[in-house]
Each structure stands twice: as structure tokens, then as C-alpha cells.
Amino acid sequence: MANSLATEDRKKGAIQEFRYILETYILPLLRTEGSLILKVEPTFSKRLEKHIGCHKKRGEHYLYFFPALSTPQFHYRIKTNHPKQKLGAAERILREILLVSQFDYQSKDFTKANYYDINNLYRNARFDVAFEIGLCGWLGGECIYGLIERLRDWSQKTYEGNHMSFGFIIDATKTTVGEVDYLSFLKSNHSAVFTDGMSSGIKLDCNGRIVKYFSAVQEKPEGRFKHTTWTPYEFVDFANKCHFHNGSQWIGIIMQSNGDMLVFKSKHLVFVKRNGKWIYLDSHNINSIIQTKYKDYGLADESESKKFADEVYLSILDTSFAHTGGCIAIVDSKNIEVVKLQCFPKDSLDNEVDSTEKKAIIRRLISTGSVDGEKQYFQYLDRKLRLELLSLDGATVIDSSGRILCVGAIVKVEGGSEDGGRTAAAKELAKYGLSMKISVDGTIKCFITDDNHKLKELFRTL
Image (tube, rainbow, N blue to C red; front, side, top):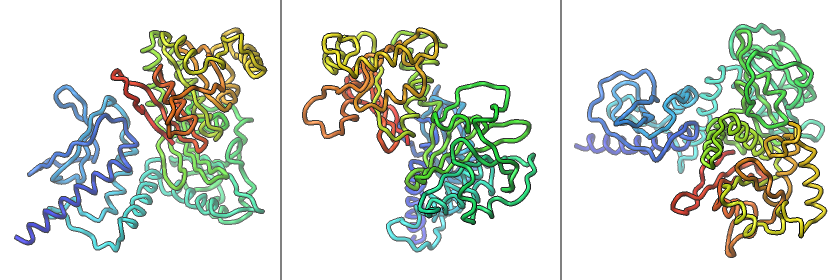
């Protein structure tokens, strides 16, 4: 009887820990809806091949999470509107974390390891390391983990009083043959002067040996396929080299002088390590949210809506990594006059009565900053100019066609708000459409007001 009660207690603990693993480490990597649903199976005889799978149930798609591949006694599921999303990274990371869990999910009585732990402090440290090992395994393996370890060491020291930045591209396959072990050389201070973590880098083979030095701005992008590069403005040339080419899968890794680590795959920035935590950047999902709302505003031309969503997202990404802070809102066409009158009456670019030097300069920059002839809409402005406009203190507001209503506007908000200026402005503008606030630390928050007039946070990243 006592053994039975002890087993039941361990099972409850295992269920709680597995949920913690999913909510903390795995769900942020996936596109899901709602909350986790627990299902306890008295018997489950089917041998599984993967811990994560997608299945259809009563007309809706669910992601299923199993703690064990052999006879799991429970599992979780959660709704998803993206049944074809890739699960490889989440699967590899979950497997690594389960290996260091205090519970043996394969055993019938959930045998518990005797870890010395206080307030789960060591547990979380184990999980964080396992996450990184799983991530590196998904990207390409042991060499990538070794490189990240070397860069982590560099983040803790300086060279001639300065924190250094580095840039590398690694062949995650075995098709490239390099010479001389560069991972070993990274232990030396002499390595500090090579690469700048932006426009130059060193290509390494899958064993960490030098293939070649490159300057990203001097080399033409490789590969035949053109598509939007989801990466900040300053890293575009670097990111264009991080893709599959001639049998090699090139993975890019940059460490910035502030200690942030960036991982690029398939020309996209996919992971960022900031303040000791790895963060997944789901660019496709964020872009899809913006594009869907743009269509909801009544302009459903697919090529135009894609162009609009692409450029808006790239601009908030640029602002995030420029660390200037910013606020941008897209208002529904039916709310244009109301929002101009109630939120920024004096800062409206259409207001000729309260004309100022700043507005005259902004109008001139917009009129001359288009990269496509006379189209003076947000999505057609030079990308760097858009970043500089968003960096102005205040809010930038555009309508659903991309017409710029104001730049650097001081938005009138209700009294009593405890939020900072940009957050309060973003929440106020969300009453009229979609708004995004970018913090100086790089965090992006997106707000909207639902059909019940309740403020809702659509997504948060970085």
C-alpha cells in the first residue's frame, strides 16, 4: 500500500514536471492555441517513434506530447491551426531535456533520481543546458555546441578593454573539408581580431576547421532561390550565406559585443540568446499575423498584402536589434479620422495648420525616400529610413494601405496608466487596429482589441 502511494505521488510529480518542461521550453517553439490538456492513460501499448506528433480529432488538429516512447501512462495535447509546422527542433530539445529529468518516464513507477536540489535551482540549470545541447543537435551537432561554448567564454572577457564580436558559418553536413582547427584557436586572445560579427566571418567545416574567410558584402549571395530574408537589416548580407548550397547546410552563428548570440538557418534569424535565455523567433507566424490583419482591413490583394506584412515585420525586427525602441500602429481605414482627432491631432502629417520643422523634414524624407518611384507608402520606403523614422521618440501610425499618418507622434492616452510611454501609446492605438511596441531591450509586443473591446496581446517575442 505504501509503495502504491509513493508511486502515485511520483506520478503526480512527473506530470507536473512534464507540464513545466512543455510550457517553459517547448511550447514557445510551436504554434498553438489555448492551453495544455492532460490525458491519463491506464494502458498505452503502442510503441511511439517520436515524443511530439500532430493528429486530427473531431475535425480539429492537436499537437500531442508524450513523455515516454514506450507505454506512456499519460500525455498532453494542445490545439494548433498549423498542422504542417515543422517539429524537428522541439522534438530534439524535448528528448535532451527528458534525459536529465529527475523522473524516469519509461518506468512504471516513475523512478526518481536522487538529485541534490534546492527550489529547483539545479533542475532549471540542467534543463537550460539540455535545451542548448538539443538545439545544437538540431542545427548540426557537436561542433556547433563547441563553438557556442567558446563564444560563451568570450562573452565573459574583454580584449584590450573591449567586448568582442564574432561571426561564423558552419557546414552542418560532412561535405566540406577544411584545414586547421579554429575552435582550439578561439581559446587564444589572437582570435579576437578576426571577424566583426556582422559583415565578415569565417566558414568552418563540421569539425570546426577553417574553410575560408569571407566578407559578406563583397560576395554575391549563393543559391538560386530568392525569398524574404527574415533577419535584421545589419545582418542581411551575413544571413544570405546561411542556407543549403551544393550539398552543404550552412548554419550562421554571431556573437555580438553585448553578449547576445544569434543563430541563422535558411537565410533567417531563428534563435537569439539574450540574458542567458534562448528565444525562438517565429518570423513566419508573426508575418502571417500581420498579413492576416491587413487582409481583414479590406485590402486582400495577396501580393500587396505580403509586401506590406513583410516590410512592416522587417522594420520592427530592425528596430528591435537597433535597440532604439519604437512604436508602430496600423489602423483600420474606418478609424483614420477618429484616431487622428483623438490620438495625435497636432502631429498628423495632414495637419497643415500646426506645421512644424519636424513635420516638414519628415514629409520631405518620405517624399524622397521611396525605393519604387513615386510610391510614398511605408512599405516602399528605404528600409534604413523606416528604421530611423521608427526610432523617433513617439509613435508611427499608418493606415492599412501603408499611408503614413504620423511619425514620432505623442499619443494622447487615458490618465492613470502605469505603463511606460510607448506601451501606453501602443495599447491606446490598439483600439483602432493593430499596434506594436518595441522596447529598447529588443522585446516586441503586439496588441489588438478583440470583438468584445478587450485589449489582447497577440504575440510577444525577444
